[in-house]
Every structure is written in structure tokens, then in C-alpha cells.
Image (tube, rainbow, N blue to C red; front, side):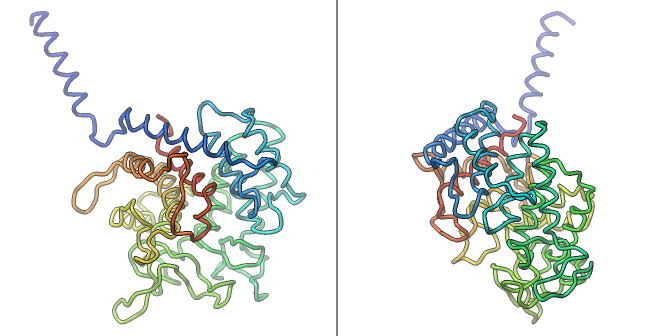
Length: 387
């Protein structure tokens, strides 16, 4: 073969390799767009930090910790950044003797989200001590044998509260608080074989609409998705599942609808707990995600409420896909979607000129620009992790 022919063959091989690159591979342009959105969101949050270092402190240090986590994911920002340093001082000021980080409300929610930020600073002796104590605090809140429900009944493995966590010390557990607890434990390095993960999986799987859910599967639409809780408001009607998405008639029986934010939250928790990918619960949740792929609303919610919890949905959407580790998914019609590229496009459309985000459906505090911008910041960071 001549040198010319050899060169031509090599060129053809290179062209083939380039053109054979999956169509869903995140492009340099996508990455640049995401990073530009990240920078604008951070710039906005820098401008809204309070004098004491906090953002939206009325609920405690949680939103501040969420912002810090998003900032620390930036390759050029560390704990010595003046804004981050000031925010960390505020977070540290909320540390209690019991290891928790909170004011007077929402101890699990606040401490678990503080673990997101602290986990990004692991390796420092003082921080590691805070992480350990905070982990033990939220694990101590989790419903398990030795605990009692709000009606004074003991909790055992068959109790509807078992494995769950809620907003208050004795309030009902729910999917949101339980999965946020696992986010904090995971991000701060707790081993997935810890009993806290295993207990949480018990609660989470009982909130899923599957045939494997022997206790509550007959009360949930059997589509692989997840509902919110296994008890009524404020713990009333223990063992009566609830869902903000409402209910529908299935075969003459009323069953609760599943919806996007809780389904992605449940799915990523299965991933963090390292359930086998062939586990029927994992496969069912993955099917729900494929069958309900949507970035325009919180899927599964009725139309009047379709934007309720929308940015939290986008955040857990990003965490779940990033944890699963596959850049694409094939929809029922055969279309292949690059979840990260799609999310970058959507969040770019939604970002305001000042870098902020806000939800016009002001439910679950999503009218708060600091909270919603933090959700969007973390979601964008998840699209470019490892890039």
C-alpha cells in the first residue's frame, strides 16, 4: 500500500470515529452554555447574600447550604471565596450540641442539606467531625425500632413510618424528607451499606406503585412511580397513603397518582443505596422515567398544578440521571434523548436576565428566587460533572 493510500485509510478511520460519536454526546457548546448559566446564577446569588452570610434564613440554614454546595461545585470556587466563607460561618453558627444544623424548625431538612455543603469540604478534621455528628443526628431522626409515632405507638419494621424521615421530630415521614436525608448522607460519604440506607429503602419502596409493594401497592397506580407519603397530613390516618397528584379510578378502585419529583427522588435513592439494576423496583422506576420524560412540567401532576414543585423536579431529575450514569435514554417512540443537553436548553430558556430563576407557581416556596436559583444552579452543575 502506498503512503498516500495509507494516509487516506487513516483519515477515513478518523472520520468514521468522529461521525460515529453518539448523537447524544454533550457538545462543547452545550457545556459552555451550561457554564455560562452557572456563572450568571452564582453572580446573582452573590448579590443577594445577607449581611450575616445567609440566603432566605426564615427556614434555617438549608437554603444557604444549598447555595454553598452549588458554588463549591464550580472549579474556580473554594471555601476561601469571601461569599462562601461568610456563608459557612453562618452555617456553623447554626450547629447544635446534638450535631444538627437548624434553628427551631425542620431539623432533618436543614441538617440533611447542610450535609450537602459539608460533604464538599470533607478531609478537614473539624469538618469531618461536624459531618459525623450531623450524620448521626439525622439517622437518629429516622423512624426505626425504639421510636414511636405521633400517636405514641411503637415503630417496628411493619409500621408505615419505618425507615422514613419527616420535617419534625415526631411528624409523619415523607418521600421528600427521606430522600433529602439520603442525599445528605450520600454526599457526605456515608457507606451505602449503613442500616440507615437499608431502612430508607423499605419506606421508599412502600411509596412506589409496583406489584412488589405488598403493603400499599393496591392503593397506588401500578406504573412504577412514587407518591409522597404513607400517612395523612400531620400524621393523621397513619397507613393511608397520600399524593399531591390526586387519585384516579383504576378498575373501579381509586388509586393514588404518582408524579415526577417523587419518582426521580425515589429512583436516585435506589441508585445511592446500590440496589441491583435488575431489581424489579429499579426497573419499574426507570420505566416510569422513560414513559414520562418531560421537562416542561412536573409530570404526573394534574394540569392546574403542573408547575408545582417544578424546579425541585428539575433538580432531582438532574441528580437521578447523573447518578444513573447514562447520557441518554430511549423513549417509547424510539427517540433518543440526551437528558443533560435537554436540561441545559430548558434552564437557559428559563433563566432571567439577572441570572436568577423563579417559579410563577409559588408553591413549596418556589416563588423564592434564592431557593429556585439554587435548585437551578445545582441542576446545571449536574449536567457538566466530569466534563
